[in-house]
Image (cartoon, rainbow, N blue to C red; front, side):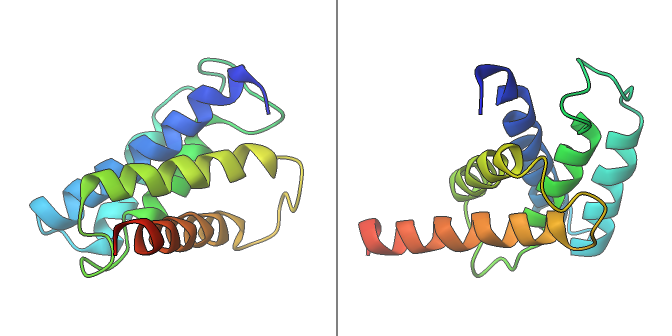
Length: 126
């Protein structure tokens, strides 16, 4: 993982935070919120800022949108969502060459980020 992967990590965090905002604050529901973020992310040009290892920023935003679909009982704070997005973004960059074209990769990365974040916050803040 290199420093130029930082924009992908930020894209995952942005997708997670925007989906959470639409889900909780605007009460659109998890599926509609994720779909709206995915559709809005699809308008970003494919090579913006540069296509990296075959992964576009669109894919990173959509991966983050799965984080924001979580239950309010678990994802109850924007700081937690940002932390889960950071963890998922790091794993997103690490696994950029693995399992391409297989279904479930983005959802699994979102789950891993939320699970690790929940585990760490449980250990350090409870």
